[in-house]
Structures are given as C-alpha cells and as structure tokens.
Image 1 (cartoon, helix red, strand yellow):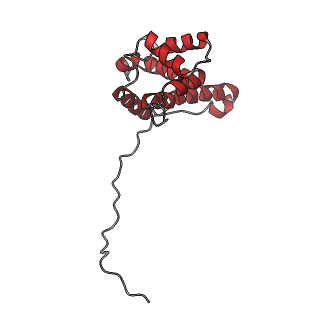
Image 2 (cartoon, one colour):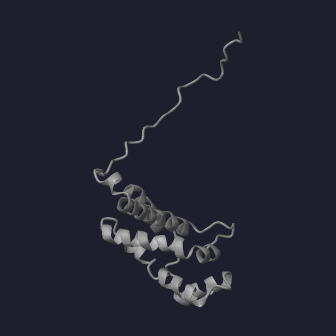
Length: 157
C-alpha cells in the first residue's frame, strides 16, 4: 500500500467538510429525501456507519491499527452504501461531495490489501520468497523547456 498517498488523502479529507456536524435525525431526513424506497434496516446501517466518520478528525496516521480500521470503514462505504451515498450527497452540479470521493478512494486501498492477502493464500508460491520493502519516491525534478526565441523563424528551405 502506498502510505504516503493514504496520508495525503487523509489530509485532504480532514480539510474538506464531511458531514460530521449533522446529527442522526438530520442525516436520516437527508437520506430519506433523496432515497424514498430504501429499506429502514439499510438506512439504520448507514447511520451507524456515519457514527465512525467523526473519528477521521482525530485519526492518527502513525497508528497503523486505527488506520487499517478506517480503511475497512471506508471500504464499507463503497461496497455496502454506495447507492444511498450517491443519492444523498451530491453537489448542485450533480457531482459527489469531495469528502465522499476521498472516502471511496481510501476504500480502494482496503480492497487492494484484501485482494493481495487472498492472492497470497490461494497462490502461496507466487509470494513465498517475496520480500516487500517500503520505497521512497524520488524527489520531483522541475523540467522546463529550453528558452526559444519565438520572434525569429528560420527561413524555409
């Protein structure tokens, strides 16, 4: 997993305004407004999922156990509640709210780690001798085109 990218997503998530200040009745009204035919048990389950969202604000990126739990929590958003979330949290232009897009991206990291673990279980010979080490990305190098004098054009030949 790319921990630097996960940490960047978490910073972005903390910076944008997830609906942490909405209480359960307000959230339920919002969901029911946009999704009229959703079963009550599914809405209740989504509301329980929302109870874990305020923990984002206190999430410590150093604590890997909490980070993995949050990735699993984010994974549930995409896997279990995508339809309700898509219907309930769109901007006026029809796009998903930024906080939700970030949670969906983080959820993919949870899926990727599960898929890798499943591959290791099903095909152990592929991974038995593999050692995984963290790799630091190289520093960004500014690349600029050479200075060209655009006022002078060479003659046609």
